[in-house]
Image (tube, rainbow, N blue to C red; front, side):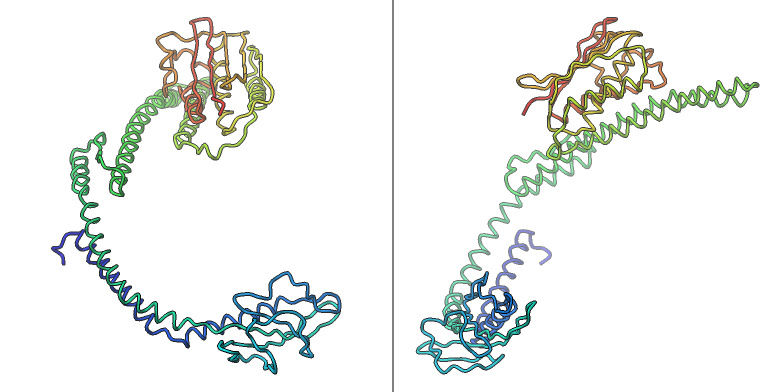
Length: 455
């Protein structure tokens, strides 16, 4: 058995299981007798009568006969009698002879009526209401099942047909298994090549990707692509983060050593602590940005987006930024009312915050920031324009890269620039199906334009 191929072992195994199942079914069908069928029918009769009896209710002093359910349930004819055994509601089967049929509580009887056999059971129920109670007989009548004859016929049919089905299934299963396992060798070879070479850029690239193994190979290719991107992003992220953190950490260490070795007066110690505090604030801001970017990389599910009022959001962000900066730069807004779209309000708010914050940071003293939100025929357009120092043409295609800073001299504020704000804006726009572009000239200002398509 150990030397057999996998496809042969699989075929033999499920053929054996099918033979076992078919044999068990045949034996089970042979052992089923009319006693079992009779027991099932009686159980059905008893359960239905109990259900009817427990569903009865009182209307004032009388039994409520305006029933919200049918007395004929589960092939059982149910009849209601009062305590004096007078019929209140219900009908017997057409062929059933009910003459001289006495009431025998809780006993299932077999009644012969013409050529048919019926099972009959009588149950006495006490129905209680607010004004008292009343006793009600519930009689259930069901025709005896002819299932034993049916089972005999089914057994004879199954005895001849099931073995042929097993044989056909075994042959077909073997052919399918042989065909299905052909791509395995190709998959294993490609996987070994990737493993031996450590090259995540290689792919399995199985041409027939419509069956399960083909879909598995496609899934592996997709996984390898994601792993390659993840490793590349991790390398770039580690390099960029290390570069950004190196300067403030170096400054903190230098100031700490200076304060320990050279600072003599309280003013010198305070100056050193001030420098350390500024650099620590810069590190804290960078870490916050990195965490936010990490969450963005998880790609929020657009199907879970809510309806967002962009007009209210833009007005709120403008007010918050003006209060936070308390700058000589003035903000003017031209925001169209009641512009709404599907999106994540927190992410869209961060997009607006980052663009306006960028305009404040790189704007000129006593300058102006213009914020606009308009709904066009095919898109919603959000723009932020400043009259600051602008961006050189050589930097325009790089400013949306992570950690890129066109001019480090422009980040002298305590807030500083981590080079992640605009990269985050582009990522958020992409998540919402939009895009962003910038028009800028040196010493004349910059205009960032975000467009979200109207769906």
